[in-house]
Length: 217
Image (cartoon, rainbow, N blue to C red; front, side, top):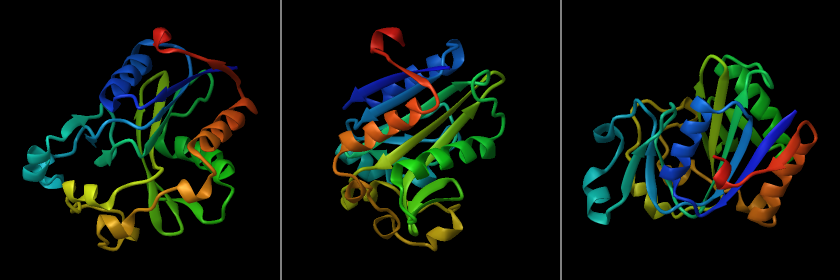
């Protein structure tokens, strides 16, 4: 079973989402897409409402671009300190049709990457102890599914001021401000390269990993 591996660096998240949407809707192969960072963006889930979740005046003042994913999930601020990891699978390879089935697989996968008792999933977030280090979103169709994750390699707490505290939030958040609710993963790995290499090595235990380029998307 082959999985195509596309490694991007500082690639615009809007362009990445366009590639993913095209692949999930019109391609038959399975993919792992990793992007180390993006210019500053606000990324929203398909049903998120900007006036409820964003400090729009500050965003306009600082000229931060806003984009909506074609998938669900919450609202996040992303920049060069974000590592995006997306899995796009044909159900012929991994026949999952429900969110919890996908999470069960990704939970097991990422626990091997982190190899730490502090790493776990709470609701739809990956956490270290009780702080969120990664948000997730999914898209499921008849013959394919997608799971994309945004890991905080590092983050500037001041950028969290672009986001309001959502009215509907995970219970474990306990009304904490963004700065007290989030954490980075950089102290758990020697480098970004090491984190990404671990993902590639883990994939190679179950799939034939085929390196891909943008020309193939």
